[in-house]
Length: 308
Image 1 (tube, rainbow, N blue to C red):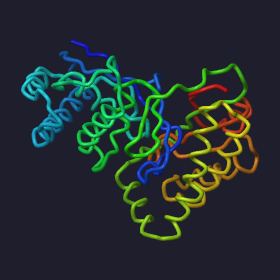
Image 2 (cartoon, rainbow, N blue to C red):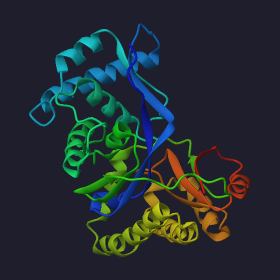
Image 3 (tube, helix red, strand yellow):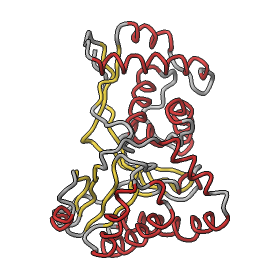
Image 4 (cartoon, rainbow, N blue to C red):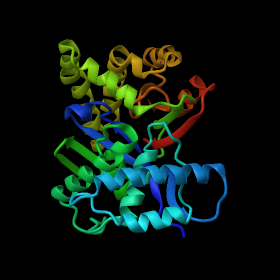
């Protein structure tokens, strides 16, 4: 048995801000995907995944209620038949590995499943997000539910606020010089400690003010520019956002990348921002000239996400 594919996601804009109810924009990233498989694969990865599914099953037993209604007996039988999540999505990289797994489990075992084919009203989207938030909390302690939602729908999602999200269209890719790319930090990040650092910082009035006045403002402008296809304005705002993140989110940026981050701002060859919660994994890059960025970052592994 092999189930449908669920893709990785990239939160282009809105990391941390969405916790505080500002805008966000998430897009599917089809270079990585995962699928539930029942097979006799004896590999360590398959066994490890099967063990993780067993633990997830135990967690879901305590969760199962009117809102999160899953056919857990069926899930248990499949786990006993060596079901595992066969995935190319790197874990701890900020591209939604646990989100894809949650989406796959919901798709296969949910009762009264909300499907992608029906009219996705705001209420249905919020219900899905709430279900996914509770399911994914097993992996991160606290989850917004957005990663599984993005993976499940495989559509770009515009987050206007916690209670206002909608599928959205993004401009078609162009054959221009500009690009969004991923930079591999080669460090595995953990979401929960990073979110805890952020929540502690939020106790500081000055930090809260910065989030409202600078971080949220530039994030919102970047999203508006991106959706409108206003590339010139976008890069001006991404540069401002990159500066704010370097100044105020240093603990979420691996130490070895502080200098590289600053170099991008000074040279205008590229601008870096967090991809997900940070602490490692991928760093998101924006550049008006991808060849120039590749040359400046020749010692690092880059992956192309989107062309302007």
